[in-house]
Image (tube, rainbow, N blue to C red):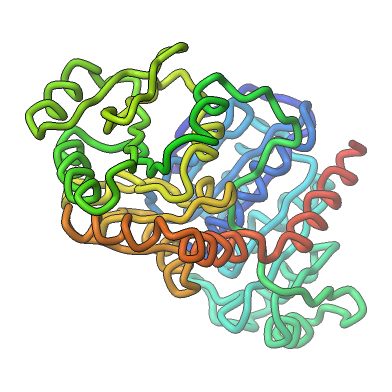
Length: 384
């Protein structure tokens, strides 16, 4: 019997697509592909598997089930087949599991292999190019190689060259809704008003630091507003008291709120859609990142929606995502309230905010063509 653990099982359903992230580097692309599949087709369910313990929040949709798979055996494959009945498999990365792949092939599951660069197809269990690995690789029906070296390795394993599609990297980002809902009143009132910066999903400890930074910002930018998006667990009275203790005038947003020149902080209730909130300010601080206990949050929604990102040093399992944006100039890192205030002042200049947000948006848009192709392929294999 398999020894795998399931994070959030879904019921047995038709039209299940199985996505497997074979290494940590592929997890971001795999979760993005899962979200895109679920967004494109309302009757699809997705099984997302991986081979290591992860702190990422993977159950991002009611039709998504994530599960760790470490045991390469026929019984593991049969258990997952019985439970989820996947009709399509996309295996992203190396560490091919021959017994699982063989069992899926026997059951007629349509399988696609996405080979990821020079480390592709290496495995903890076998030496590269063993007969078991080579045979398993040849059981796939479709092959995507993310660079020429990956294509060469596939060819050496016996894959016919004409079957290999050579593409660039896969997309890692946030799937934007194709429908546009009417902006809530707060957007209509603030988007053409005073300059503002936003703090998103901040912890109780970070609240004081954020408000301290706002005090420093206002010494040079007197009209600058701080918008704090509240979590469901946040107490407005607590935030109001902290602000008053720092001589800041704060208010909880409600329709008809008078945004006078003496208002310094606006708290945005949790029920207001976060997507709309990104239109309120050219830059945002992503919370849960300023102190050692922080676990961070994904930067991809902010990046995809055109925000200039500021973040602390503690982002937990999202470090690779932030490194990717940082190396491209797509965010600013800070370590304390003073550095945060400096970043807000510097990045509030329209040219600086635009440059940073464009760099981040470019990163999260890379690989869209390959991800779109895999989405279309998987849905076509379902007949959907």
